[in-house]
Amino acid sequence: MIGALDLALIPSSIGGLLLAMALVRRAGARFGLSPEMQRKLVHVTTGLYALTLPYTFSSPAAAMLLLALSLAALVALRRPRFARFASSLHGVRRRSHGEIYLLFAVGFLYWFSPGDRALYVLPLLVLTLADAAAALAGTRYGSKHFSVAEGTKSWEGVVMFFMVTLILSMTTLLLMTEIDRPRIIALSLMVAGFGALVEAESWGGRDNLFVPVGVYLLLATHVETPLPQLALIGAIFLTMLIYAQQIGVALGMTRHAARATLVLIALMLAASAPHNALLAVTALAAHVAARAFAPRDDAFPDLDIVAVSAGVALLWLFAGEAVGANALDLYNLTFAGMAVLFAALAVQEATRLRRLAVIATSLAVVWAVLSRAAALNAATQGWHGDLAPWAAASLALCAAAGWFAPEAFDRRRAWRVASLAGAIPIILFLTKGLLR
Image: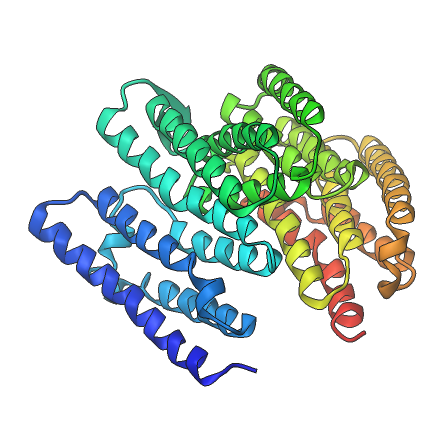
């Protein structure tokens, strides 16, 4: 039930967001502020207000309604007729949906951190303040750059992000948790290092989603991890980061894409047990094969698959939590379908016999891994009944699409593959999860 005060706060909050944008636009025109500076001012204002949501709204439903209406308003502001008013958000030359990702991040944190304010506050502080500080430092003082999908970023910005995040993390964990101080230092170093890496590897404004979600998952997973184990995890990750770049380059990936892929796998491992990352890794490997043997015209295919895979993981995490039905089997089934379809696309130009052999082998391997993962997850998955018929239908659909209509995936391949692979898992969720 949404109370009268919450109902009054919703339109006033949206009005405040629009007012802030108008004021920033006027200040930008008067004082000659760059488009990037204007966008960051709106970003900081929005982030700071989002920090107050658990304290100002008594009803979670009201807060989620506010986010939904704010999302609708921001989408509407992307229409050409509002271009001048929304210039404080969209005036930068690069294509970005950062304000949309920011709202999704706030919704994620609000939904998944009830009762633990540190898990809500710290990721938002990092997103709001560390990101803004990094952007300003990089813009003003950046002289040493590295390549990303959109062009370049500066090492000065990365260092600023790390330092500000380290300070925010130590301060927040000291004030809002009972964690002992040595582990606070270790956790803060991990949060700062991992957050800086995620921010550096993000593109198209996706850091507004990936950074807070990554910081949340890291903290939620390791808040009780002993100090020696934290040190070991950090050392293993750094070692993997070094070798991931070398392996990625050998596979035809850019260093940026290789690092982004490692970050994705690390987040998946933080969110669930290792066996639930096997099919995602299999799908990523099948994508690499498809990109190598049947390349198409997508500009950044390796980054596309990283973004799509992150979206699939977040979709099933949200969906399961929303209805109280663990969706790990559907998450795994989606990646299983993606792996089969990518494998079929990889051999679309081969002989019929070789295509048949590759598709049959991929089906057998994926079925074995999916069955084993489902057995290990069985304690939390009783709501959907027998997974086998749904899995057979989904994998058959993906194999058939790769065999009979490979040309349907010539453009925006990763997005179309994920959409088809997710179709039957979504039907299963709608028929069994929502109606149970």
